Image (cartoon, rainbow, N blue to C red; front, side, top):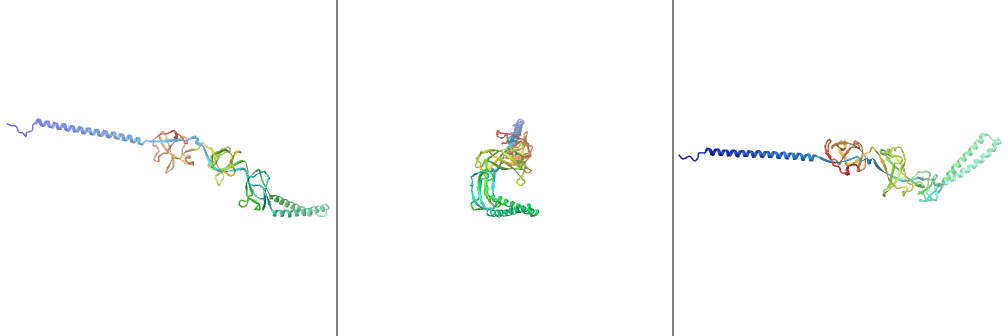
Length: 379
C-alpha cells in the first residue's frame, strides 16, 4: 500500500521542532545579550555623567592674603604754602594816603616806613590838646606857688593838679595816635601786596573789604597747615613724615615732617590742624596750592581689594577659604581708596580671601585654590 503523501513523518516533525527551539533559544540569548550590553552601556554612561557632574561642580578660585605692608599707607590733603610769618597791615587812624614808599616784592626790615597818612582830624586834636595842656600847666605852676605860700587850700591845689595831669594824659594819647600816620613794617619780610594809592581814604582797624594797606610775608622759611580727619587724627604725631607736591609737577616731591599738632579736633569740621615746616631751601612760594601726603602706619589696619567684596541682602560679605571650604563673612567697610578698601571688622589678618567670588558661592562649598604669584597678597 502506498503511503499518504500528506502524512507527517514523526522524524521530520521532531527535527523541525528542534530547529524552532534552537532558533528561539538563540533569539532569547541575543535579547539577553542585548539587554546586558544596554544596561552595561547605560551604567557606563551614568558613571561618566556622575564624573562629569563632579568635575563641573568643582569651583576653582584664586585667593589673596592680607599684605602687612598695607599697614604703611598715605592720605593726601590739600594745603596752601605760607610764610613763617604773615601779616595784613591796617591803618590805626582814619585819614588819606599821603605817600607810600614800598611796593610789592620789596624786602623790608622791621620798622621801615611803608607809607605816610594825612590825618587832619587827629592833628587838630593834638593842637587843641597841646593848648589845653599849656594852660593847665601854667595854672598848676601858679597854684603850686600859691600853695607854698599857703594862699590857697590844698583842695583847690589838688583840683589844678588833677586838671594838669588829665590834659597831659590826653595830649600824650593824641600824640601817640598822631604817630600812627606813619605805617611801619612789623618784622623783616617781603611786601606781597600793596592795596593803596596816593589820595585813598583809609579807615582804622580791619573793617571793610580789602581794607588792608599792605601784606607782608617772611619767607626765610615756609610752612603750611593741613587738616587731618578725626578717624586718622590719632595716627599723626609730631615728626610724622610727609611729602609735599604741586599738581603742575607731581614728580617733584619735597620731604618734610609735622612740626606741631593741635591735639584737639575742631568740632565744626571734625578735623585736627597740623603745622608742617618746609626746608629753608625750596622753590615753593607763599600762596601756592599744594598736596600733602602723610606717611602713616596702623598695625591694626586691614585693607583688601574691592574686587573681593560680595554684595548680599544682609550687607557686604567677603568669602574666605579654610582647608578648601568656603566661609562667607559679613564685614564693615572703612575708608574707600578706590581699588582697595579698609575693613573695620569681620575678618582677621590671617584669612585667605577669594578674589572675584561669584555671587552663587555658598557657605560650606568646597573649592580648589589655584593661585598665581601675582595673587598671593594684597598689593
